[in-house]
Amino acid sequence: QVQVAESGGGLVQAGGSLRLSCVASGRASALPVKGWYRQAPGKERELVATIIANGDTNVADSVKGRFTISQTKARNTIYLQMNNLKPEDTAVYYCNVRSAVLNYWGQGTQVTVSA
Image (cartoon, rainbow, N blue to C red; front, side, top):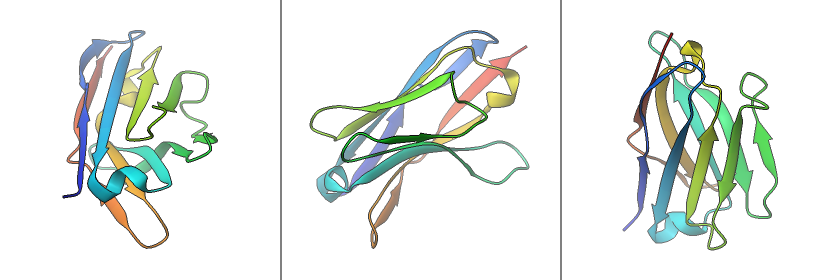
């Protein structure tokens, strides 16, 4: 059974930190590209960061230097460490796991940053 499950969202003040986790189970755990996207109210879903099997990462300019993506050695869990959070980071954060032919999304976790 394929499952992609996020956790770790919440309410934090500006300047604070949160760490999101995403566990990929079943065939999803072996897919080579894993990442985080976010969607703020009234906006389109956007890329936050991705990590591939060899550990190379891609981080959006809007969060570079503040957010870090990482994965466990088994590559079945990825993390998004978010530091110096800003109100504009408020969004639902989604975990995505994919290959060239398969694409799975988690249910999303809300991150709210108060000014």
